Length: 347
Image 1 (cartoon, helix red, strand yellow):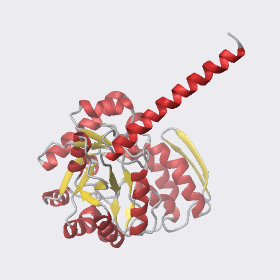
Image 2: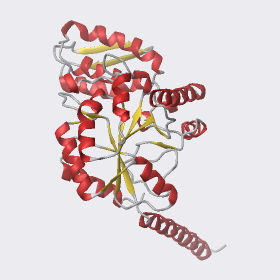
Image 3: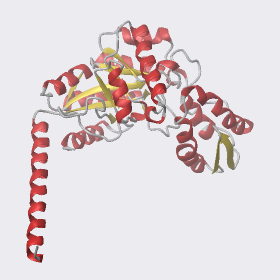
């Protein structure tokens, strides 16, 4: 084949590829034309002094955000949004509000606002923490690294058989250590191993550690709901419960049998607590894999939600990794503008 013929063949292949890409973009636009929505994820509605995870929105801000969303978008239940996705027509600019984990402040601070504004919500419950008197382990970890009082200038501990070494002389250094050195190790452990793995950190922080929590106190305390509180939360017509595993592990990092046990236990626990089989599952940390998605489907869930990228929900959204968008402590107008950008994304 001559050089000219080679160039012609290459150009023909490139044009064919570009044509295929145009077809895919048109399909995406047609899907967008059938409407799109957002699953908006909250964790805490609370006043805190430290929030390295970006999990907390103050009650006043939460109220303002719901008011703006009701005015600028279309607030709906997660059931309604999913029905639209599966039925081929999502009411455009739909927003479904969900919570993860099961913090007590969801009952004390969020529910009164939700009820006053008539906003349906879904709580994805990490069932193994229900009734625990102390904070979730990741919030205890925040106190250990960033709480009041002095800390050693160096963190040098063995966590789950791994040596973790990091400078901790300043708050900035401790924040970096928390986010990049310590939490990634602990979040990758099976749930049964986490508490014991925290012991070296407790010993490291103890000499200078103060009493007050940076995670909030009173109604804003960073603790899970009790079983009685959960029943009160779930009793109203605006609340639906979903499952979020039992121990909140990163599922893809666990063996298949352990993943299956976590997913099924979470489903069974929610059914026992609420008296209704949960329809939906949310992956802890938003972290899923093909194997994890298959396990969730085999456990009987209708749909599962992740949050790796802030994408809209369309009729083409993956059934077992439907995207969610995290709420932030931000001005209500900024939230609406951010969701507008998400809704404009064709993926």
